[in-house]
Image 1: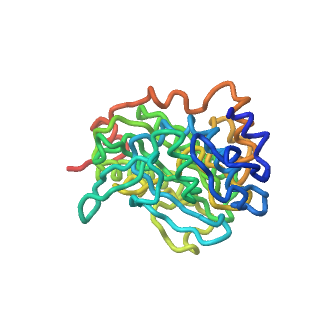
Image 2: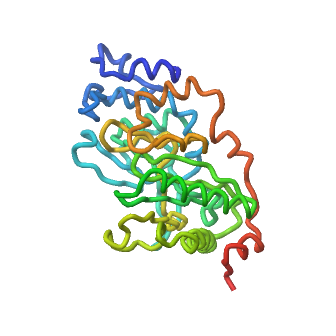
Image 3: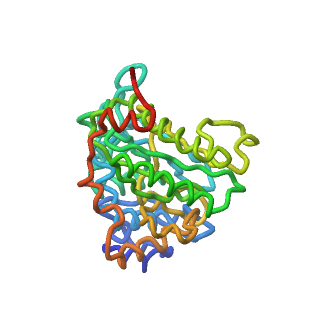
Length: 319
């Protein structure tokens, strides 16, 4: 199924037979169950969506441990995170060993479109990958700065801070790629060579966040302060750069009203408020079908080495 086909079919249709309910080779049980009742989107609609956008997701999922938000009866019912492997997950879903505080644990991973659809069949709505791959799980290959605004922060103020981040990281030789989260915030994703360990990655991104906060203390906080202390400010969360921490995958659905999608965007698209369900299951396939250029196309070729000079330039040193 093409992305355009998925857009046209993203309306609930009763499945007529088993063949109608098979997506990417995965049989979808209870295909008519509404996962987003307010948008009339069924489990089958979600499966078709993930089959259509799966090729776009795979470069950001392959060989990565996943934390998964499962909503077996839809987002309005009970949802829960699961990260460890389960025998009930289809064989299309890979297993990999990853380190935890108490030793190694078996995680799930997705390296094919069939695997993504098989996770959906298991009730997974959201996919959250690690920032590192199997071959170097102790060293991230991307850094993430999560900009989380208070509810009273204006869009223009969030944009100003995110753009300031872009300018700062470009000054030190890095490239930031932008993503909506399907919520109120934005992510700046920075691909790097996997040469820093997690402690250094966390320290480096904290230094970036702290430098931004020093330049705009009236707008930015970098610690998880109380809601009252964060009123009118933007929290820059650098703790996603910690072993075992995750961030929502590009093109993942969110378990929120109207099926919002975490969507890669161009920096120029910040001219419009693109948060919450601005991008959603129904319009993202059409967007991708019409898009002439992938906003993240250059990410695979962008792998700078984080030098000691870069770290020093933002005030970080492990010495």
